[in-house]
Image 1 (cartoon, helix red, strand yellow):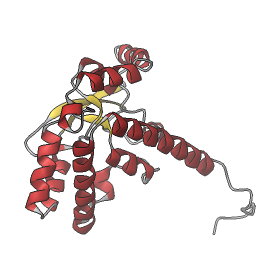
Image 2: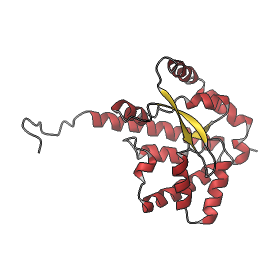
Image 3: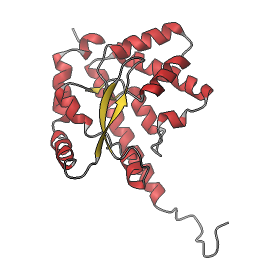
Image 4: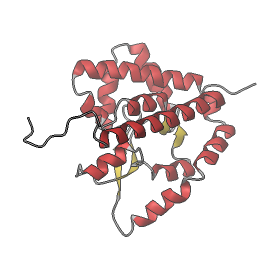
Length: 219
């Protein structure tokens, strides 16, 4: 009988699937880690899955700067490439709940007024390792071509509450429906989202041919 939910999440089959999927990327992530010894391009950031839980995650970039190159890395979704090594070690999982800044996670959980939903959300996230791919991650990247952090996008209380509820529903559904088929569907959705985002980003870099040329001052 196929494993579903927590049984699949903790199964050897899921681990083998993830190991096979990341194996082509591990050498690249390792090369980036070695490069860091010469040029400091990787930094550690505090992350959390639920209130009271913290760990450190590796990212490419400089936390004190917001340059065009760093924004491109976020848009291209490669700033978290070093985390593949954590997946390989078993500290993280390829397919699982996305972590965020501890302060933002606290705000999200506080924004969910439904105590039953909040409890189910915390339980679902506490029973898993931090992940890279999830239903919410696909949704978030698809609607965030500019690569702006979630805490900045949903700074207003009402917006944060709506986003928190949506994120809770998606995370709980991922946890309860976890299975081989569900993981494969998430991988396909992530690939489709990435292709679509790259195409949209490329279009934004090329001026539209329908736009009239400007020879004078900008109005």
